[in-house]
Image 1 (spheres, rainbow, N blue to C red):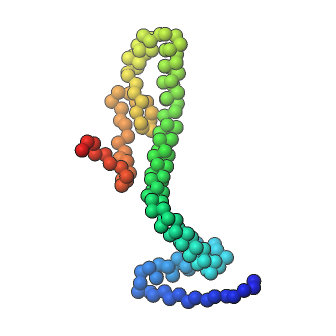
Image 2 (tube, helix red, strand yellow):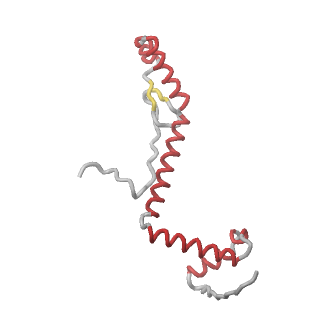
Image 3 (cartoon, rainbow, N blue to C red):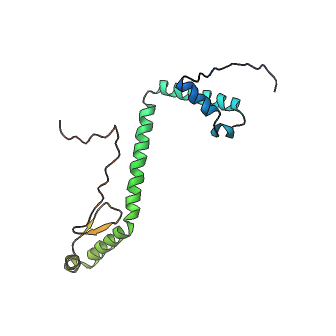
Length: 151
């Protein structure tokens, strides 16, 4: 390489938590994945500054990132529930299609009465008989949710 080399010394004070943490990061296993500590420091400075500029140009960037992450978690949970209940949902759909195709509402209604009314609940078990237990899992805390209704 040709060109000028510029050197800058950095002091890490052991009594300062931020300095000590930076020193530990600089000497961690993760940094060894880079060609050198110098390359890591340059990339860290550039990434930090690019993010700083993006946030200063768009002050809602961080909030949107949090909202997107929250939406992704919701989608993932819904997908898990749907896939966990898929066979039961298909069975109910086919039963309904059979009722519509044959016009035999009474026969299907009798079947459901004889076997206990079936309910689709949002649980890993899918369809539960009356009296079955559904999940009582609480949603994760999120600053964007407001469950209060009314004024």
